[in-house]
Image (cartoon, rainbow, N blue to C red; front, side):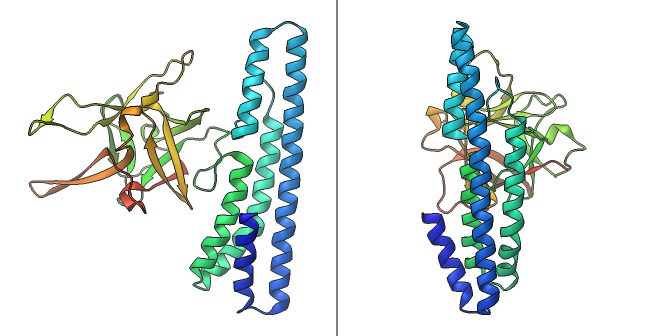
Length: 306
C-alpha cells in the first residue's frame, strides 16, 4: 500500500508538468506492468511451493525424515526470504522470476530516466524506490544487488574511493585491502555473495575463502587496534560462524555492509579509513559506527564482474 501511494504521488507530481494524455498513458503502462509482474511472480512462487510440498509429502510417506526436515526448512526459507530450495528443482522458477523482473524494469526504467533527464531527482528517486520495493518483494533483495541465483562473480567497489576489495598476499590469504579495479581478468578481486537464513557471506572467487573480522594482535598507544578483514575457509557441514555473517542494507544502487558478529555491535559497519604516512595516502578497511546518512566511505557498489 505504501509503495502504491508513493507511485501515485510521483505520477501526480509529474502530471503538473506533462500533457494530460501522455501522463495518463505512462500511468496506465506502469500500473499494467506492476499488475502483470505481481501476477507472474505469484504464479511462479505458487508452482515452486507446490513442488516443495509434493516432494515433502513423498519424503514423509517414504519415512525419509532427514530429507523431510530439509524440505520443510527450505520451504520456510523460500516463503520468508525467497531463498530458492536446493532439494527441489528451482531453475524454472528462477527463470520466470528473472523474466518478470526484466519486464518490470523495461517499463519503469525509461520513466525513471525521463525524470532524471528533466532534472526531477526527487521524482526519479521516488519511482526507483517503488521499483526497488517490488523487486525486493520478489527475490528478497532489491536493486542494490545483481541477481544472485546464478552465483555470478562480483566486484565490491567503495563509492568514496573507487577502489575494490581484494585479499592481500600472493596466495590471497592476507588481510583484505583496497586496490584499483581490474574486474573479471583478476579473479582475486572477484567475490561470490551467498545468502542464508541469518545473513550473507562473501567468498573470494579464486581462493574460496570467506571474509570474516579478526582482532589485531598488536597495540597502538596501549589501545587495541580495530579489527581487520581477513579470510578463511568455511566448513559446509557446519553452521556459518557469526564473524563471517554480513548484513547488506540497500540504499538505491549502493549498499552498506555490516558485520553480524556479536562483538561488533557498536562499531559494525565496513568503512574505508584514509591514512597519510610520509606524504603517501593509503586506505584501510575497518569497522566503524554506522553513519546516518552513510558517507561515501561506508557505501559500496556491488556489480557483476566484467
